Length: 454
Image (cartoon, rainbow, N blue to C red; front, side, top):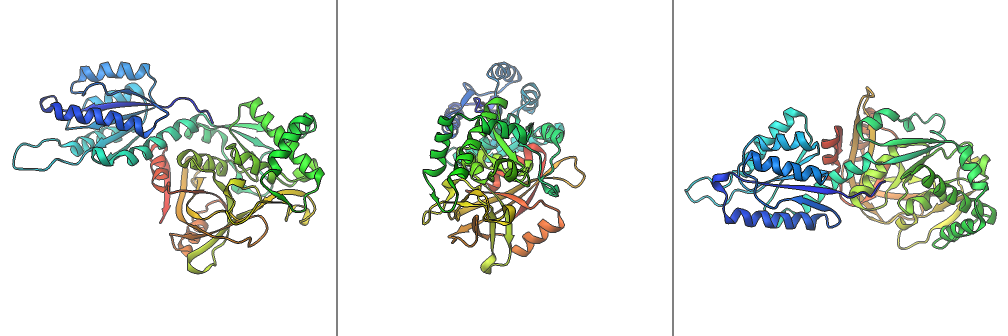
């Protein structure tokens, strides 16, 4: 995913007859907060309070030259209703409205009316169909709220630059891995590059021995080898370098991989360990050709900064509202529970099990988690997203692969009924961290229907 500069446009607004030194001090503090909220970004604007249409027009020129990616419109007081729609039309980027609590009332004149200004301007943008979000907080309480919403807007930009390599298409019978390439491009901006398994095979056979050795070191440095042969480890190392070459050739950010049924026959190994290696360095790689599952991983990674886990929900039968998520052995090693060590194994399922390597097997670490799934709606003309949360608990190696027990916040029968009767796919992305609110905000600005289960 491209790491191009993210630029914030700051628009501190006030009613001209109310502007004073106190409001200018609020502007100065607001500008400092934005720079603190996203330290690696650029902030344009904010040099003065905007009180007139002409001042707004002049600022629009400055912000256009800066190629801003989001507008933070800060209502220090009520303000003219013509400023925001002009800026929105001119700059065509999402808007974050920032309103502040009303100062103490002591029987005198209304002194701010900040929320009312947001209310009025939100109506205008709603009618215009322009994307916006809203935070309501004082200067000393707004930082985390702004950080969350700015990350959402940065994620929107990053998705528009995401290029995903679909290697070999989806696996047979998994209609849950189907994706509408042009719908995805139109609605989220994500581009898909179709890559054949043949190209991957040929690349892996031509890998320079030095590169292969480097891949082998990376595969084995943090894991113990259980029963994978040296030949399987060598082939996995070559495959890893082949994927890296495909990434560079097509300028890719992620992969969705048709990991069976041909893969083991073509390569002599499964791809799970290679996917684990790619995931560990942030080249997010989904299994079974699942494009939307992989895009969900990319979204969660962008919002949380943490590496996600591509998985099935395999048990809803545990005590105390505990379910089990799992997959074959492609989770990033950095998610391994602290009390164990990753094990390199022959695959427990390919060709009946225990015949071909290589998987990276371990239970995942505990902590608060967010579970999500991007999905097409039933008519296939838009998207929805399942969003739920829970607490991952200390998990033993319950079965081969990568298990994780989660105590869900939502009742498991409710979750199960939603998955079954609303027709969600059986793959999910789990990430450590609380990003449910950010996912809902992302849905707001990307016209995705949020299905939230708390």
